[in-house]
Amino acid sequence: MSCINEFLSSARELGLSCSVLDPEPSRQFIAEVIGKFKPERMAGHLAIGHNSIAIPLEPNEFTYSCHLDAAPAYVFFEQRGADKDRVLILHNGKNLAKIFENAFGMDILCPTNRKATFWR
Image (tube, rainbow, N blue to C red; front, side):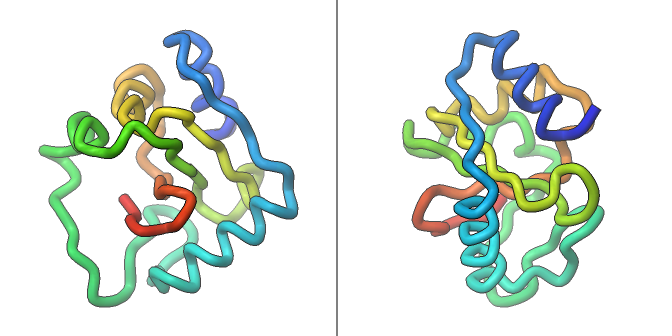
């Protein structure tokens, strides 16, 4: 199952509101985020490539989203294969950790807000 389908399935199971951007707005948004954060890699585990503040993933994976605003979280995955050029919108970003806890293989993604002011 693709990460997109796994995410959507998990959101449905949890009763969370989620939608998918059309392909062209998805490509534009991904390009904006990539241009801003300049990741070192776009496949496998994506990595921020310049002067950004980072928190350790392991102890925060299931808790950091509770510190986000209750605003939409824009999510995309590594940029190769089936999930390329697709953006999901989880309508309440505080619920992102619930998706992680309920889904398998959700560790390769890039959540941000509409203004791309953060990257996981």
